Length: 461
Ligand code: GLY
Ligand code: MN
Ligand code: MN
Image 1 (tube, rainbow, N blue to C red):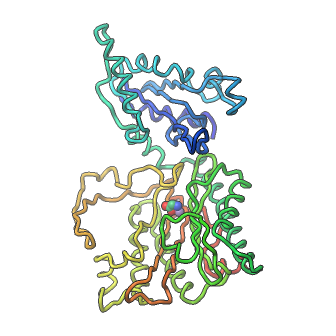
Image 2 (cartoon, protein in one colour; image 1 turned 180 degrees about the horizontal axis):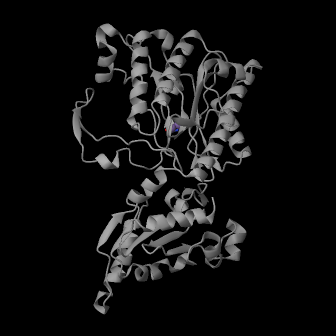
Image 3 (cartoon, helix red, strand yellow; image 1 turned 90 degrees about the vertical axis):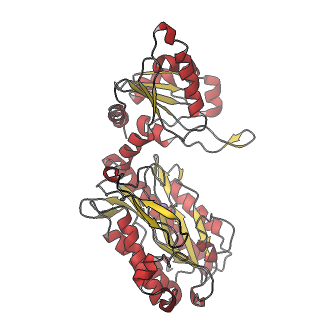
């Protein structure tokens, strides 16, 4: 991505700001891990989308006329020796295409003057701790000058609205970066699968963290900066814990391993889950459940194309899973009725309790409304059969080419009354990343196979 891309986005965003509007976008703060050590720094996604700038201590101010002002850390030889290179405000306009740049220390002095005579100030609501009070302080300073004829902005608007809409549809460069991120992650999954089978064949004590290390290795070898989220490497029953992390549990011969891991490449996430037999060979019950989840994913993929709704893949998944749960005896038709009853009453919920996907982009759970913006007024109410809560529904988003989402059905079987023992403690999820196209979707994460036979084949010696 070049500075021209970000400049074009700033111009586009400026058209949303109305007459005399102004937008303020900070990057993310550095976060302390312990004493004088910080967490590895990750920029704010909105800020990066508009600047391509990854240093901390930076703010962007954008006017409705399209004028971009950057505040950033000044050059400082002493600090740069310790903390690394800084672009500095002198070089920023040429490097980033902004109109002007100042040292971050000038932010409080300059912001009131930039806000003066503006109608509306836009900023991302509820995303940066303390941002509202900083803006309040600057507005107070403007107000102090009204007797000299200055006008103080009267409106405050949430910048997430227009920015989320822009980010929701990925352009060709973004899609290309996401394809490359998914390819790296796919290779990492293959490596982790192969390591698991190899170590077990060699009689070694395999732990979840061994597989995590293999993922990390491939992410970094591929040029990724870091994992897009905390990798889940869940052996055996741990797969039934949805937000499990890669931990110390043994990876046992005969059990399944669920890995949900994806790298971030140049600011863009990938998000892949595969579930595989630790030793490379599915047992009968494992394969039966695996084939069911895969069939439900196939149905979701078939429902993913421009013109379909965001909820359609989920509904398609649930239909297949519900029928499969009846067929495999996870649900008893004498108790729960037909497949339509299972869906209506959400009887599948103990085994499938999450949605089938989410937007994917710079953030792993990317921004973007899940409601169709042209139909926000069409509210319908229904009572949730499990909680009895009245839920307000709005028509879900109509998919467009360039939107990117995950397709990630699963099944999680905790031991319980009437649950066939052969399925106890099996947790399976299969997750792929899809770019919506006119006629269907492009699965960008299929560099790692998904069919049971293909997984077994790649894990053979
Ligand atoms: N890895 C997070 C998710 O699948 O949503
Ligand atoms: Mn996901
Ligand atoms: Mn995931």
